[in-house]
Each structure stands twice: as structure tokens, then as C-alpha cells.
Image (cartoon, rainbow, N blue to C red; front, side):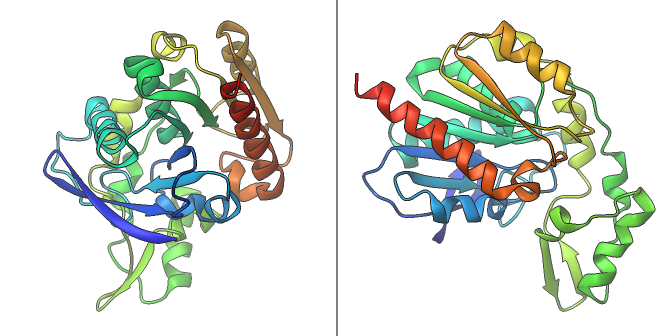
Length: 267
């Protein structure tokens, strides 16, 4: 797995590549506060797919955008540019949270021209959340442990997901995500996106953590019922980060869905 870069809308954006050249393409999109390495384990296991995982703007090793440039269309255009310039073929998109909504909005706009399948991890057709705490996250902490512990003031007691974005600098430990603009990004993500979710017909798999605080099982079932070619899997031991909570079952469900897509494409 290697880190590479591309340019979109004057930003230098980073991505990971599992280098399985000549295989069908899967693009992975992380959620707010995450980064491309959220999918690193999956990338290493999927040997029959050329997997790319993108550090979306303001996250990981990608550039931070200026205020006002975390709109829905900014995120979408970044991925469309990637598909057209790097992947060079229709792709399957796997998205978690923010990345999940980005994924089905890309499919809505491009449909079968660019997207031939979707895997949506714990993201709904309606989004209503608050990331206003982000700007209050500490700039630096003397140790990695203290950086994680600093999140407890926001009632975040399991820092594993956030610490994936931690980096050591000469000033101490810090997060790579753009904490000053993530509240704005979340506000732009909030909304009723049913029209986008329903405006494509490619095969789609919804992955839901039963203990999630972001979306309910009833809502996931409603999404699957209203959109054709859509099914769902509930992970009983998982919260919002299904990939971290039940990695083996997660891989099995993703791999099974991808195998089914390959079979469909051969007929």
C-alpha cells in the first residue's frame, strides 16, 4: 500500500493505493474526523480489487480548504475528479458517515456513468448532527494518551477513531483534521437527502451499527425498502464505526457484496 497525491480545485489531496492494477476499482471515503487509513485493513485484504482510499479535504494528509469551501459540491467534485483522472473507469464507492452521503450523492449526479455500486456505512438519507465542539479540541497535547483523554470533556470516551488522525509534531501531539472548519462542514452535510439517495439504481449495501447514535435501524430499513437494488446488514455489536467494532464481519459482508457485483457484471 502506497500513499499518492492528486489535485482538485487547487487543493493537494492524498490517497492510499493497494496497487492491485488491472482489478475492478473500489474507492473508500472516510467520515468526519477520519482519514484514509480507516480502511487500511480492508484494503490489504481485498486482493481482487484495486482499492483507493482518499483523505478527503481537511482530513489526513490532504490540504485544508479555506472557510466556505466545505460545501457538498466541493466534496463531490473532489471524488469525481479522482474517478476521472486516477481511476479512469466506473467504480464502486464505499463510504462511512460523511463519506457515505458523499457516495450516494455522487451516484445521484453521475449514475451509471461513474458509479456501478455503493456500500454505505452508517449514513442515513437524513442527516442532523452537531460538530460545533470541533473548534474547541486542543491544538496540542504532550502525549498521545493525553490527546485522547482531552476528548472526554466532549463525552467522547473511546478515542480510537480520532487517534487514527493523530500526529506528533515539535509542539506535541495533534490531530491532522481541520478542526476549525469541521463544524461548517457538518452544517453543510445536515439536511434531507432522500432525493439524492433515491436518484440512482446501482446495487447498494447499507451497513448499520445497531448501537449507532447517528442513524436508527428503522431509518436504514426504510432506506432499503424505498430504493430498488438495496439491501442492508445490521451489526449487533457495533456503534457508528462498524469497521472498527466488527472488522471480520465487516470484511465478510463487503467482500460478499463485491463478489456478487463481479458475478452480475459477467452476465
